[in-house]
Image (cartoon, rainbow, N blue to C red; front, side, top):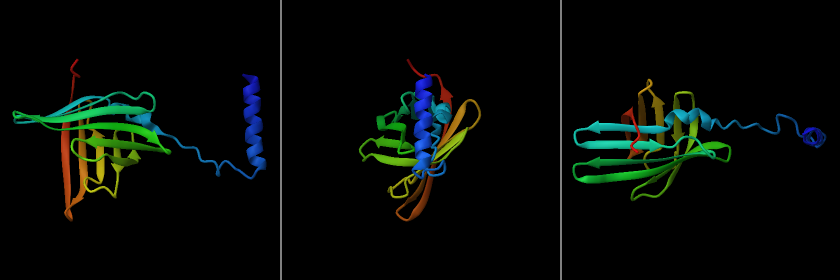
Length: 163
C-alpha cells in the first residue's frame, strides 16, 4: 500500500514538472448517486390510460429503466431508458418505440431534480424529473415541435414494484 501511495506521489510530482497544474487537470464529479431517488416504480392514471415507469437503482455507473403506456385497447407505446456516465457527463439515453434513439445530456443534477437537454433533437429537446414529496415525482418533456412550444407533464405517484 505504501509503495502505491509513493508511486502516486511521484506521478503527481512529475505532472507538476511537465507544466500541469491542478487547474489544468480537471476533477469531474459525476453525481449519478444523487439520482438514486429516481429508482423504483411510478405510475400515472387517467381514465383507462396508465403510464408506468420502472427504473433500477444505480449499479455499474448506470440506471436502467423502462416505461409503457396502456389503455383498454392494449399497449400504446413503450420506451427503454439508460441513465449513465459518458464523457464526464450524465446522459439520459431514450429508446422509444418506433423511433430512433435519442441522447440527452444533464444540464442540472440536484438532490431533488434533474434536467437533460438535446437541443438538436426534434421533440422533445428537454426531459426533466423532479421529486415532489416522498410519494410523487413530476416528469416532463419540453421543447418545440412544428415551430410551436409544447410541454407535457407526467405527475407520477410512487407505487410498489410488481414482482
